[in-house]
Image (cartoon, rainbow, N blue to C red; front, side):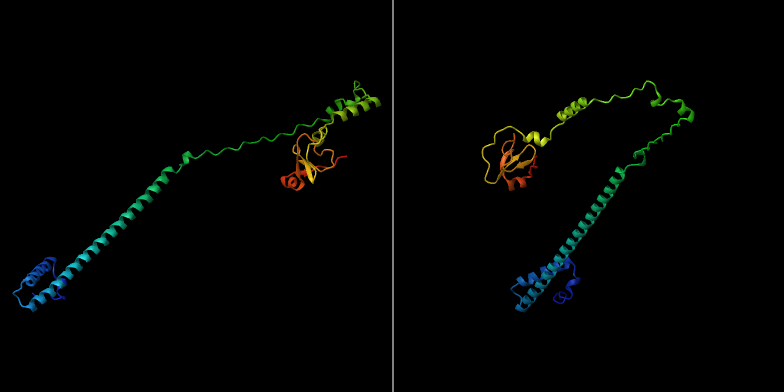
Length: 225
């Protein structure tokens, strides 16, 4: 049995043979009537057999892990293939067919107008001219007094500029101002400096520093007559 269980021969043993050898050397190791050298040899062979059994178990676990990994990869590839096929099928189902395409809009034909026939020379000669009609009376020229009255009416009806009607308010100057401040007319978006007749007198406005008014977007008022 010692010769059969050499390290070079343990690889060819089956699992059952290794188990039998292990049981055999366990019995020899536990028998105290045998000589010490046989017990030591049995212990050495028992250690070799157990290491071989452990190595085979680890190999079996490694192979099982590899099989599981291959199964997982195969399952992932199948799932990916199914997802791709399903996506392509959805695209084909949702793709509009030629029957559902919108009908091309016909461009309306614009009829070109035909030129009207020009009157013949005889028709031109037959039609009376306005100068030759006896009912046409010369337009009376207006008298100088009427012309002056019309010019006055036009001047009265002419609207005043928006800036003047807003600025020329007969209000007393608002309290405050001075010290480099300007009066901002918030209604038309301009400002007046100190000394102007509209400084603090418009209906809507406020005092501001000139630099702040410029940054806000207000512009200086144009100089009036």
